[in-house]
Length: 60
Length: 161
Image 1: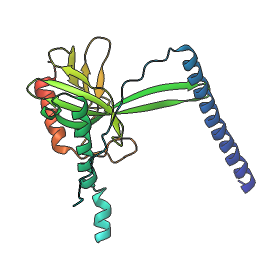
Image 2 (image 1 turned 180 degrees about the vertical axis):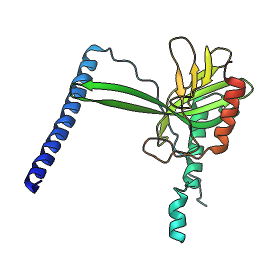
Image 3 (image 1 turned 90 degrees about the horizontal axis):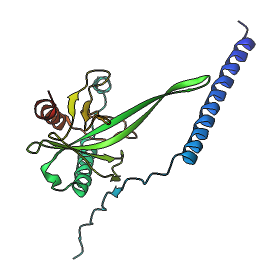
Image 4 (image 1 turned 90 degrees about the vertical axis):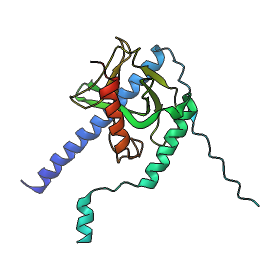
């Protein structure tokens, strides 16, 4: 198979892959927007951050 | 020789990092659970796999939730606290008391997760392993002995027949 044909096939595969990625993210974003619009905002559960360790007092 | 023996040994656990994380897990757990010291701890995670089909693009998405799992032998209670891989914080605890749950058993397929049904409508599947290398997804902690103790507790004293 000539090198040019191989290059064309590879290019087509790359285009399909990129389009698939774009389509996936487009639909995901659309679904997220729709969810935001129609689903009532739920109160996020309480979050407890890790307490900052008290530095040992090494001053004399 | 030295290079190859190291290569075939596989990844080595950074015990300093693991111990530091075990300490953080304890601090977070004790912060939100009353008498937290009476519970033994392991790290576990939940896995939520959903399939999608967006026309010609289809596949599956996996969501992983990190958990600090505590268990108390005498009260036969498991407490689950949601957290994040870097242990920068945690959520509110959920208590699963053996006397109050609907059923509990260990799954066989597709994973050997610990399954608890608090009621008919909901369930939690806790996956736990000795050590998981991927720090971006899981808490970096080595817990061979702890996992063995938890498995023994779950199978012999918590699971419903």
